[in-house]
Length: 143
Image (cartoon, rainbow, N blue to C red; front, side, top):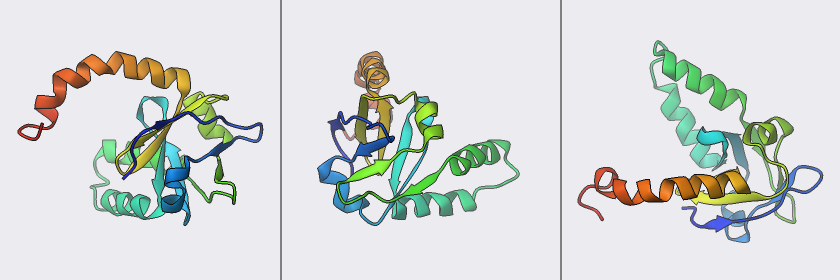
């Protein structure tokens, strides 16, 4: 499970230091792909395989499934962190998410998300009231 918010920087080669607390879980490799709201999703290989299996059983006759699968898999890049815990974020993915230097890496349960730091701060500010208002609808009877 991935939790928390971290603010690493991209270096000149497009590499990002993974937060130390996640390195062991991602040591066997990871997959970076496009996410919603112009962020990047980072999955441990095992979790990406689980999602792949779920999408494999989805009906290809459904246009939404085809469209989502095409973007999701075509933009995916399998990576392995170096000995310092850095992972290269491919240029096309950096462009998609608007990443330049300052990033936010957030824990989102079974994945990490990489955001441009300013975009994340704005998104969070815009969503905090909605978060308070939705807890009843999203998690009925739990919180």
